[in-house]
Length: 433
Image (tube, rainbow, N blue to C red; front, side):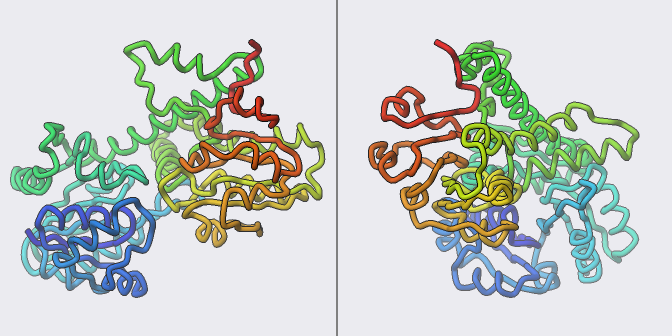
């Protein structure tokens, strides 16, 4: 099948590579000429484990253009995967989507299926269908196909999905999407068909619920520290109930990235437009913003003034296995530390360049974890990269000015760290035994 994909960002490129791997011909479009040039030369413009290898393997079935017309005229179905960035009020900016739709409607000379792959506000498919009816001379059917990709595991999620959600109107659209996704569902997991509005809401429901789980465990962790409980034991105890899935119940310093923060706030705004105050989601957002300040607050309690202190950060990406720093807790921490007079040294395996560009204040980017820790008055664990989990504790103690760790991801065994002569604080782990 000939497939057009408009937008070669994270979602669009992962989908394109995986569809090409299934034997389809892909026609990919992006308005950024630099990105198109990179792709044409076999390079992926962002970090995602395994993607570049699979991309190069299937490059012969992929073509790249700067013009929407090139993809629309060649494709049987067109996926729209352009950005829907967050506006100041939390709602989604749909201007990129509708600019693309104008081009599709102007170009299409025969019936087309348009698949909305980006995360869009609930009700967008209906608006797009009306827009296409008004602006296109041919029949266009809008299909909703929200993505559920985890950064750092996107290939696995696309090639072996838990489920594929499709919002559609006709049986023809149902058959088309079944044909497209059948190769990825050999494990027996389902394609779930529904109306477009329900499909759009499903995406927000999934991400918002996971965000609330993170907020819940983080609140319990703060209370555990106050009461002297151990959040690890608490989590083990309550998630042993077979009604409670333990996934995402891990305390830390808050979620970041392009999905959870944006989707939670977008759903809050959607509720407001319907005169509905979504109390749980407002609370989850507030808890998450507070959690990003926990390490710096505890650091100030321990050291007093941070003026003239050197603070090391291990990790800049919002999660491991990605170079994404959008709404990453690290950026908030660095800004707070610098505003309190500290010097910040940081290391991340892949996200340093993005953090340097995105951070509103300057910090020293280091080439290794030990370089960042050298001369530091405290070490903050911000991202749970695997390489951070087994440091040489004797060397770490030796290079630090003050052997003090604030573990924002609970990656260390407190007893082992303390035995090495390093002062240690985790999240929700200050149990009195």
